[in-house]
Length: 65
Image (cartoon, rainbow, N blue to C red; front, side, top):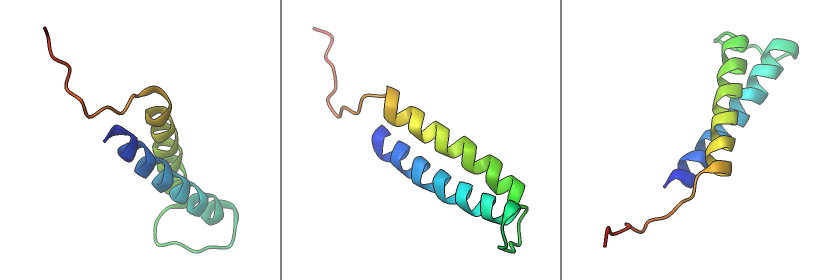
């Protein structure tokens, strides 16, 4: 479950990062502030990478025996 969330955050962050960079430095005209998309893209991308890198994805429940 954690790896799925990490994957979604990474992909969403990468998309927001690309759109933010193109909006800030390129020729894409957005209805939003491109700097806000750029900052959110960085935050989501690195948090998703962190989840994928440091969390173990197990569906088993450990018993206390």
